[in-house]
Length: 519
Image (cartoon, rainbow, N blue to C red):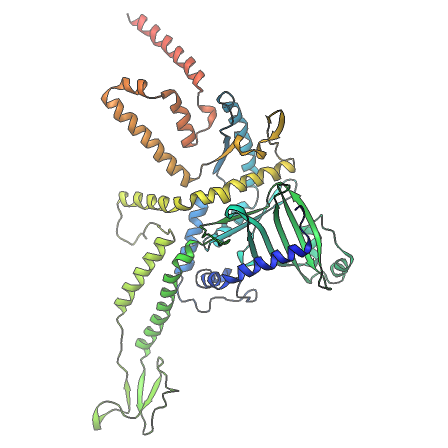
């Protein structure tokens, strides 16, 4: 297929935007109630409140806690939350040497990652991920900061599904000031009619289509920027061809046949809507009970079309209760029980927190919780998070690391090792069999710790029967490497099997000499 024609690109963009519009109301309702400040679907002007119709901060609170949990448990800032390790295709005799090279490479990658804007961009991306789909665009930066991340709101994106449920095309429609086009895309080919606009109207907003799609015939990604000129004909301003996808699109969960993901906020949306509506009614009830509503006698007939019951309002009636001694103005009876309302609201809040994995410890004013309960809360979060961990690794961490390595390698910031395959030298990024990405983030360490504990418990049980069975029944010489991989210990501190043999021989001689001296 190679490079797509403009006609076909327009057709693909139109279809993708149609799919996006089909679920617009669902996503928009989630943003309206839980992230009104980030709602780009409503088309409100910059600086507007966007809080109309929101009567509870529960949605905003749980979303903020979700973002914090993701940041702290998956990609904690200024922490090495992942590392490169030798893949299954690397022989055992080369594994140790290969891992030393990859560890140095990992350190360099995180040096550039920590000096970039990744922490802030990833945090913004998590806000969209809680709805279902997060998007990061990775661009080449400057010489001293070669990585530049942009969190793109899903409201601006139209996605196209590829093979096996993957993303095959990413289409973004947005506006940029004319004067910034040449700064943002230094390789842009500016036509004369657009150049005139840049010179004569530099502040005018230019609508652009940012198009990224995969070409299976060449196994390459195309990144293009299109401009719809005044004569309604699109023109290519930028065309790039790379081995990596500059976009990282991650979905929390996915339903067959849908290209956009579905996140925790969509699951909690019915409860949030109920809570929001209940809070609205509760606010009206408080006003009614505080200020009251009254009836006033009038000889005429009540117009039911215009009659309204409002706080401190007066409803005109033909006769108040009380017979001949009825008052001219009487208060309406109060209705509703605030205790029932609070009980109902607390149940909704608990359900919302559970869905949103908001298992924070209780406030200090609450009753004292035991250490066991605290540990169980942490384990519950790890279990809930684990259901999405596989997809996050596949769609987020793995492509993120691969793209970062390729960009840094192109910029000359790092040197990606090469390995010989069938007499041909290839970079390790070109064959995943020679490298794998191991997560070191807290959410992965918890699972690794459980694996270590199960092994330790088995060894302790066998040692309780007969300590010699441990040496006979298990390959104890492989335990140091197992513990090092699971717990993320630097490989330089762990002896190889050959070194273990030498150390054991030296220890035997030392102990033998001591026994001779004692004899």
